[in-house]
Image (cartoon, rainbow, N blue to C red; front, side, top):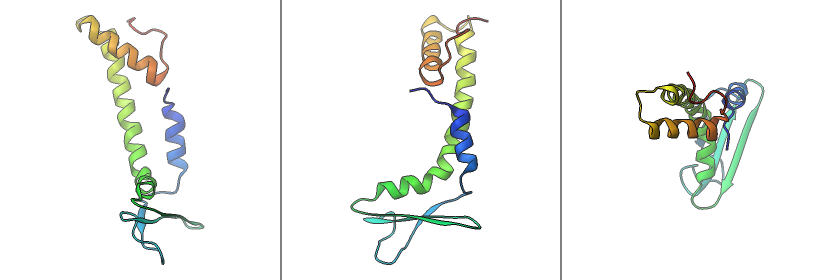
Length: 117
């Protein structure tokens, strides 16, 4: 699985600003119980995703995605930069450089120039 951080970040930036959260909807329990809804509001649209079932992890996942995705993209960008530094540092043992190179290749699709200064 290769992560395209630019595409993920662009989707997150275009989404309705957060925070999103679970809320009560008539006939449904709260999102952190057995069912519930996630409401996403903008100036022109209210979107609600309602679920029933036990437990309702889907609604919580959607509600937290608005905050979680940008944070994970920022972390992945930092990790990618750190991996690049490790992959070319001759003072770091060969095994660690190989692990960094493997991560760059697997998750970020980077193969050119790995291990080169």
